Length: 100
Image (cartoon, rainbow, N blue to C red; front, side, top):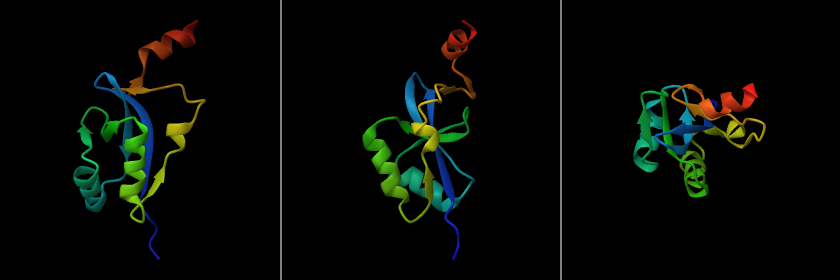
């Protein structure tokens, strides 16, 4: 039995909004699901697909990949992770808080 590919979900700050970043190794089948079913947008800057971070989109992600991939959402729900990725870097406001 083949193992399912892994899709990692991360909280990201992109285009002035909170987004869900979808990270996975290149796979034509997964890319097709992301583009056609989820209508996600590709970020060249962050090198990932993303959707607006809301409960409905999260449900859509799990539904779209059911049986096709393992969705790892641990980084999305980790309360200790107060960092949002912004253009590949830690958000400036988080850096300022940490320096205090």
